[in-house]
Image 1 (spheres, helix red, strand yellow):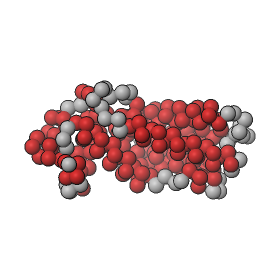
Image 2 (cartoon, rainbow, N blue to C red; image 1 turned 180 degrees about the vertical axis):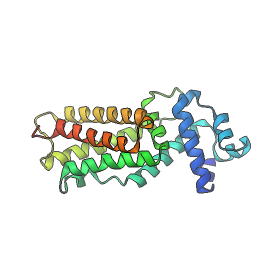
Image 3 (cartoon, one colour; image 1 turned 90 degrees about the horizontal axis):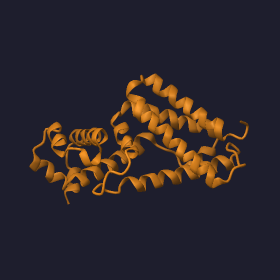
Image 4 (cartoon, rainbow, N blue to C red; image 1 turned 30 degrees about the horizontal axis):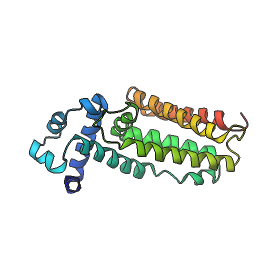
Length: 208
């Protein structure tokens, strides 16, 4: 019931809670994250906090759900089948560039992304990350098929192998970016994103 109350908060307060929770969970992991620290940094009393969230699990779930909704709106990911409209690899590079720009503008997204690379959060961690990873895997699969249909992606490997290899590579690239972005300038982040897109193209395009 308390989750519904969260939307009644002013936008600025909602963002403060989400950003603070993202940093706390990212820095300490789910089990060791301190609700008391989050509450204090948000300038809230415990009674007011528990009016909006029942417990740590609900806060974590709301954080992930709201972050993914906001990220999708900021990113405006195309339907994967649209990547084949025009220059497939130019469209892919545009996505990489957009991820770099949005991550620079909203660094708390990087803290949320880091949660996907911390491993299991413990027995009490809510299973909210797995469906998102599954959805991302489906998007990548559709994008690969669109690339093959447009002639932009090689077809000499079994599709299942290609899908697993590409998804693993994308996770490795994303993990590296998440863990190193704080030490890089905005231009360096975008340069790295373009290099990563080119790396992917060289691995997958039939002409290489």
